[in-house]
Length: 308
Image (cartoon, rainbow, N blue to C red; front, side, top):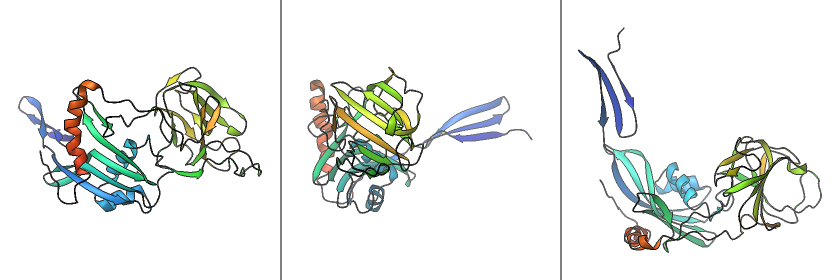
């Protein structure tokens, strides 16, 4: 009935081992290092991004990271179409030759409806890893293209659509994202909360005030996050509310608007503020790291393995 010992897996490469001896208990952390292999895959979208990435030989982690990297330029909820394509160079983590998980994406390109985007991972002299364009611009922009992740969209921006509840033409100056009730809604950019409450057909709504006269609106919410208080500052990607069907809504969805100086803009196509460039003193280091990685996107398919 006495405890002799225990083992606890701390991570993919570390295990805590505790054993009883004559003096009591002793503990050690056993290390089983991970090996890293670098692969380059190519794929074409058929029915979904996940299926295309899997068919190309990678896993869901890579699909999710790919969407995060290009999420400031492409609305992966709505804008992905059959025939879109990608090339990804990524790390695979193995242990004793067995797959553990997909690692970081090192370089990637994505063609979306004829528009081509590129990104490369750069670890700066401070040890911080971020993604940049080949020209050295950060892929991160002031606004997310979509405030939800991987849900389907029920209504595009359309100034002449027929309102499903009122049954008459009414300008629909935003995008509706159909999603299950309770799906988290993210702030599209850094902002101050301007309004939280109930407002007519919007139901439960949050309005955020951004810099340079930009405002974003999130309607039909089921409830608000604790951070959503008038006057409170929120960060890009922070959860501010949850999808619902309050107000004039036929089912659970998010109504999202983007306004510039009071004028409604199509959230899917509006030009977002330019990304910040790499700092000049890091330019040479950036070039030396990024050029070999970007070259992998142009190389013919074949084994490209690096172990360490």
